[in-house]
Image: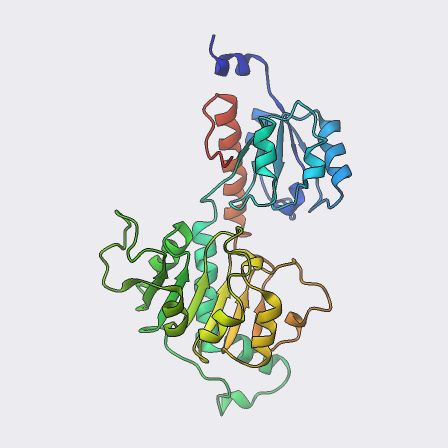
Length: 340
């Protein structure tokens, strides 16, 4: 009898989604497939910050499978997890919220979902580009505030997108490639930063003359729009700071749909106060939401959205379904998307 057969004969494993409201905040999602695969507990909160409370939820559920969505699972919490826990599913792409090395030492597999929001996040980047090129944020605010003078005299420069240069930091990955998929038909040129001088062999844009691989400094200094699409890790944390922003053109825009901490926000704020670049669009911030005292709220050249790149209804349902795929692969003994 194989291990997979034994697992199936044992019946449905217990599972807990610790912060399901982070994903299902509008109760519009269908968890029926996950419920068929597991004895599922949905803990309908957005997040839990207390390590002891996290541990208690897992202990009380007697879970074999723990599901999280962008919620910090402190080492202190995981140290208290019962031995029943064998699998942790991050319902998303980034997994820096889970102590994966400790999980490995305990024999707990950690899986993620690398591609569920590729198009959605890519479209968020393009949305920012479109808005910046037409100064829609500023135009709409003027009208909302009762200032109609922009019907006669445009007080914010607006540009065509065709022919503009888009720089993709982390652009050879799936999301960066999806951004290029939309930007190229719009007539943009795409520059990708890389430690090598070429795209990976077999990349779809390997031989496209409108896609160039350049150094980070060249990308920053020549592009009209710079989009951050790399993962957050020890090397990329605060990798975009004052030096990098000051390399950019004064007419350029910075867009972050990846992870907030890739940008040094303190240094960004100072640069934006000095109007070093034309604007910044941040769908992700170091702390979400930024604290009330954060100057990000006050700057008229910084535009914030509440990490909505992944939140479209279809994207969230796909995320639930792909989480179920990961769980089913575990039950069948054919684990996929393991990150530790």
